[in-house]
Image 1 (cartoon, rainbow, N blue to C red):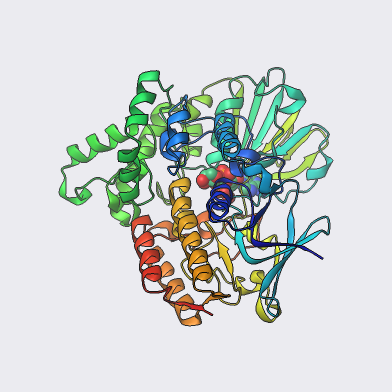
Image 2 (image 1 turned 60 degrees about the horizontal axis):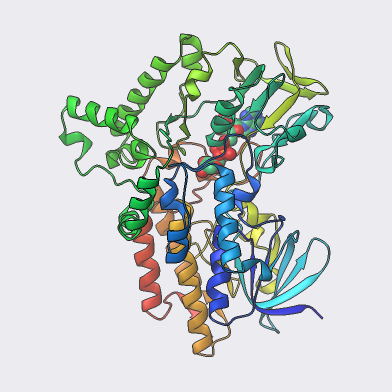
Length: 537
Ligand code: NA7
């Protein structure tokens, strides 16, 4: 006989933790299954050197507990990974969350049992559990992806994917790479953070770059006691402000149109934003840079000029300037002296389009022109984005339908929260969900609270099952795709489009580009109309 719960949650990251807390408060029996040995999700797994926020720290914490807000002190404006992991452990301790979390428990299968009106869960070790409701809180960037390169298992030195990096570094040396020859493959947001950290100490650092990414400065700094006191006094204002912005970051687009200002004013705005901390250069800029090719070309040219100005060798600089997509059409890595690393003698950029990797050897990486002898290889090669973590679970809905097969041509859902054919399943921060393109905790709270209200509605009305109608699913999917077409995101290959060259996902828009205020309003409207578009029985 399986253990039986009202609700099973998969994942003890930022969303799973809050969902557990909310449902437990309502007296429901809840079990969370988590693959890792601790809480934190992304902030548990990503222990690579240099890992940190590019959201303002104070905008990233949970807003639902005044006690937590007042007790917790962030020490940097963009907190490093260990601090965020500590923060999430602090929350887990405070609300005694671990009591209902089973660690080292990867959910391998989830099967809908129509007769029993429940989800049957099977863990990797074969043990089972069941619940009327299943909530996935698996995160959009969890299914890490190693490159498909011959010989990858033959390397005799130390190696790791960034999302599985050892806690205290290789040999317990933390971020000290002195005496080491290190290779990094991948130059997305993660690779950029790794490279600028490893470059500080490594004897030799080789960056194997397929294509560069547009980057802008983070401008991190410590938070003083006085600043932290001000933050604590103004949390309400901050969260209200974030709530109004497109992606719930503490940055609002410029009010004026880029086409209504003079060249001098536009340039001055770009300069100001480039000099300010955080995502302002991307999400506090003229809104048209994300939707209008002419506007996008202006900021793209500006960032290219800035990059050239920071790299001594013009050939290297050109190799660090993207040629196949405009600024901001992929996720913008925020950096700290990243470009200056390439002015150091210990750092060499290996441009893979010119000299492709042929194989990994026992002692290093063999490119078409030479072999690089290495002690350590770090793979910053990204994730099977958004659908990946769900696709890696064998999820079977009504009539034996597999979720992976249903989504083979891309996600189909209502509100990014539930696909037709999978009753009583909610996919927090899932594909086509407004929370997935967001300052994630801000949007997670909306997702969790909406899901909680739905379960309360089910309980209070003695309802057993919810599932979207096909018509509502079609309409949402069309709306998601139309919103994407109004932006420039589909013009670039990235995890936004489900693209990772090592994965198998179809190229299609994975997020929701209508912005969080619109998404929230749509969710609220659905609920206010008695869960319009869902069949409740
Ligand atoms: P990304 O943004 O998907 O970046 C992965 C990087 O790895 C990117 O530069 C890829 O090049 C590169 N890559 C992938 N496979 C290979 C192979 N086989 N050879 C060489 N280079 C390769 O993942 P991140 O972890 O950096 O960031 C993900 C998100 O996490 C980020 O957006 C933040 O929201 C947090 P390509 O782009 O394909 O040319």
